Image (tube, rainbow, N blue to C red; front, side, top):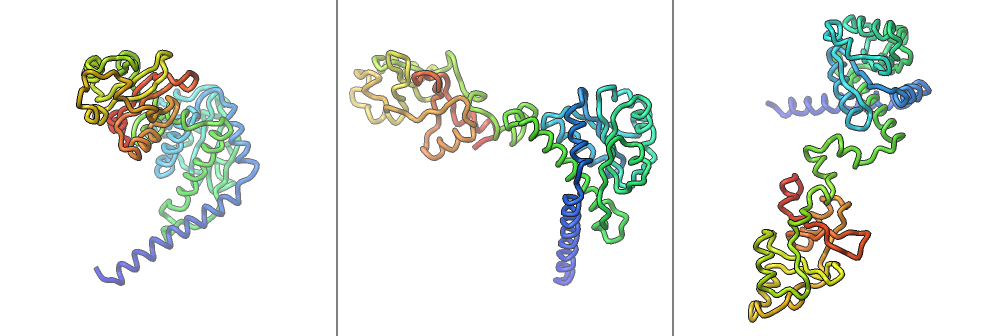
Length: 324
């Protein structure tokens, strides 16, 4: 492969991206009242958003449905061909249907569109031709600007699918912002993977109850060692008489007090005022603290109380959750 070939590839890539970027800018400027009407309709639905499309539009429709569902708008994809063979029953009164078709004349969509008209199911259409069948049948029509496809031949869905995907994202984000959808809400729909791990709270991963290794300031060190050994975290928290966390005993503390260790009490050996964290903090924040301070665990304290320990978060718990 020659240097000229490589440069040609780069030129093509840049042309495609520039063409699609320009199309997105045109789409942005074209948005108006019908977009707001579509968002209002989607907000008012008592059921689900049914998203459909054929071919490349179908792939985009699947992604839009998934984005809706993960951001607080119940939605699913219905394949138009399968709809004609029984899946029309997946649409009911109270739903809203969002149909994608660049031409607005996709024949496979006919039965689905007719079903929405027969049973008065609101229909939002997305197409590039205002005079198309889909736009004429839709309650709300979102028109894609007339811009060239990035393929150069005008036949491969490229710019049109990029605009449709962006339009779907715009609808989803407008909905979630109106509903004040938070990262915590997102995690409820997306507990797995890297995103779920990043949004995990300390309370989701911490050990609590009888699993907590705790001693009092007056506990003799032989009993502290038993507590450390039985709970298996390599540490013990040390509490005052009122239950608040006074300190922590780690392997390092034990080594520093080897001489006459068994004759000491916990208060003599502990490191006072240890680093703690709140249960509502992001687990990712806890990992950052542990890495910075070169420690392996954090006691979790009740922010509403006098600093009573309610949990223990170990770095291994964070690593198992995909953090670290």
